[in-house]
Length: 153
Image (cartoon, rainbow, N blue to C red; front, side, top):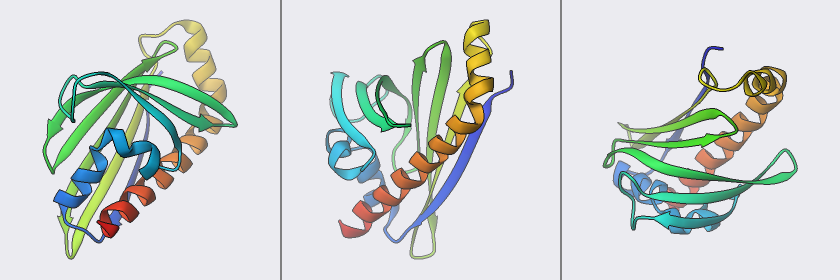
C-alpha cells in the first residue's frame, strides 16, 4: 500500500521565531491546541531530537493516546515528529517559511502501512477515507491554533 499523505499550509502573521516557540512548546500543547486533551512527557526536556511524549486527543468521538517522538529539528525552519501505532508508521513534518509579514507554516502527515500486517493494511484501506477526512480536519484546527497563539504572543 502506498503512503497516505495530507499536506496543509497556514499563513501566520508572526515571524518564524514566534511560530517555532509555539510549535515546539510541548508542555503548553493542551492549552494551545484545542484538539489535545493531555501531554505526558516520557523522556527529554524542552524540544530536541529524541524527546518523547504521550499525547491524548479526541478523534472520531473517542480518546486516543499515542506515543510520539522528535525525529528531526532545524530550529525555526523544520521539525519532524514520528509515531508508530497499530502496525503503521506516522510522520508529521512542520516547515516554517518566511513569507511577507509573517510565516507560512506547512504541515505534512504521512501514514505508512507498508511494513504492517495484512489486517493493518486492510483497516487502513477500509477506514482510509474517513480517517483522512478526520485527520485533515484535526490538522487544519492545529494550524489555526498555532497561528492564533503565535500572533497573540
